[in-house]
Image (tube, helix red, strand yellow):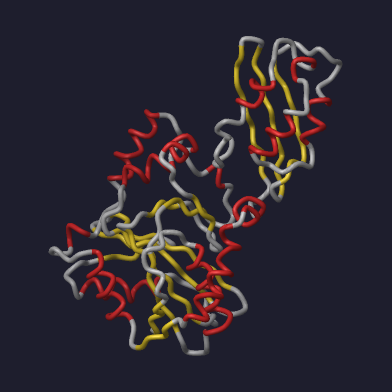
Length: 332
């Protein structure tokens, strides 16, 4: 394998690395070549086919300023921090059915030389003593295949569970114990080897030559990376889904159901046991149609509606409160 030196150490956001993966696939990769590089990030990374808001504990993420990202590969959401190493393997398409094992076995073999016996399990996991230390995602297109994954050196498991699990404290407490029984960190098994030493060892052990990204390439990658940081990529790339919001007030219970497609509100349905002051709720539903699904957009729309003339004793602030934990973005 060819090691890519990218000189982006210290940047704990994945945008640059997603752009680098795309660049390697489309511009560097040749037949009979396989590229490898490592990177570190901090935050939640969701798969390209996931609805981000459904994957995370929104109140916790806001309170603790946990960042969130969307990757160009499928699979589930993961939490990573600076004590976890991400790795990427890129190669040409195979004529045979893809298997993670064909590539991950190179990593398990490298650990065996350290006296650490890792096993490949299921679709895409690497286990240590029966517990997961690495999960991996995959993408294939006309240019080739890329696989990237986690390598848990000393990951903060409690933060991982709290950031990804539902906001119910009882569920979180159970979740931490449950996850601890199913995942493992590598650090206790490495006889004092530091995180940096482990990464250096893997880069040396797995690769036989180096491709160094030059400054001109770095500048272009930084430009390309902006796409993966955009709201369009984060939200409008999400699959179509339905968001239901529900809350009880002194004036009654209200449910609002939204159909969201490409980041836009396609349909609104409002129900509840409140008292209407008009024959129907179209005057509240219609202004929301075909609008951007974001807190800022909803707030602007509600500011143009007199809610107290539609629902008895309700206020604009009441309706806006329904959306407090519907979005990850800052509500101000």
